[in-house]
Image (tube, rainbow, N blue to C red):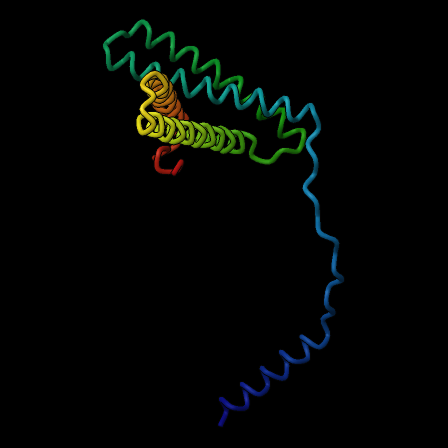
Length: 177
């Protein structure tokens, strides 16, 4: 007997609470603040520093694997200098109002890497089609030229995939498809 009475009292309290609250006025859609040119250039500098840091770290790892400790030490020192630049740029951008600038720069670098890989994959596909069309038409010189272009585009694709791996993009070739 007590349970139904408690439930009824709780429902009554809830109804009165909701009856007293007012609905908030609709606000216009908030627009994202536009970045000033200063912030854009600082973000560009931060992205360059992030790429340089990733490159130096990867170079140090390969030098250690090869056994070249002197080169590894210089790469590690350069990476530390890049890390200090990243921290300084991040501090400046935070004072400008950018939230999580290093994380944002990492995302932008990865996004740009995937975009480059997608463009390379598209070039490879068009070169394959052009080569097949030239072979079908019987134009040997055009087919050879298309083979050279295809080989160059594949080389660019491999280079971009390597750079993307260096920047932290996993399975870059799969993302490009």
